[in-house]
Amino acid sequence: MVDPVIALGLVLLLGWVLLDAGLGKLRDVALTAAHIDDYRLLPDGAGALLARPLAVFEVALAVLLLLPFARVPALLCAAAIIGAYGVAITVNLLRGRRDIDCGCAGTGQSQRLSVALPMRNALLVAAALVAAASPAVPSHWSGWLFALFCAAVVALLYASVNGLLANRQLLERLR
Image 1 (cartoon, rainbow, N blue to C red):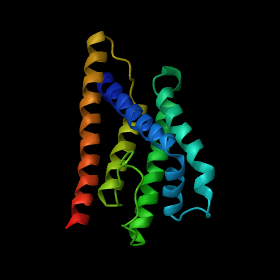
Image 2 (cartoon, rainbow, N blue to C red):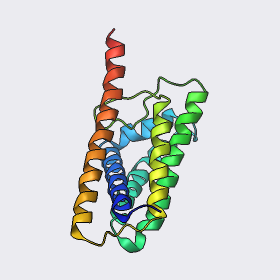
Image 3 (cartoon, rainbow, N blue to C red):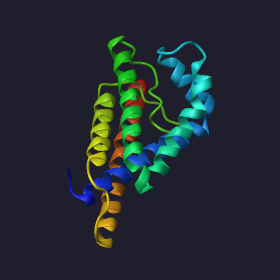
């Protein structure tokens, strides 16, 4: 168990990651379907059936993380889905398929598969499991404020690293 302020910070961070991912998928469902199909783990055309429900599920998990009675099940579901994405990436890396877009760089950006992605997902899964095992209710308003600040800083770092990885790959293509 960790301090409730840290647990709440992890919950808020995971909520932001899921909300950003789900809204990104909803912005371009056809592209999301193509990403799902590019992984070649499901039957052809499964992406078209799964893209929208997957996006809605991610957004719903982000909202459920804010509800104390649903937090632990939502964290466990978040760990499962983020872990499943990590497994899908790892399987394709082991197949030697590094040139497909992971679908995780955000709208308008492309990011090829790399070893950094399953490692990032493993950290997010660990964060979800730690938060699920800890109370996420700070006893004072300052704890809530500090948790929000920490989650925002880590979310900015997360977005920055994703942007750097996507831009690095863009620069490599220009050479």
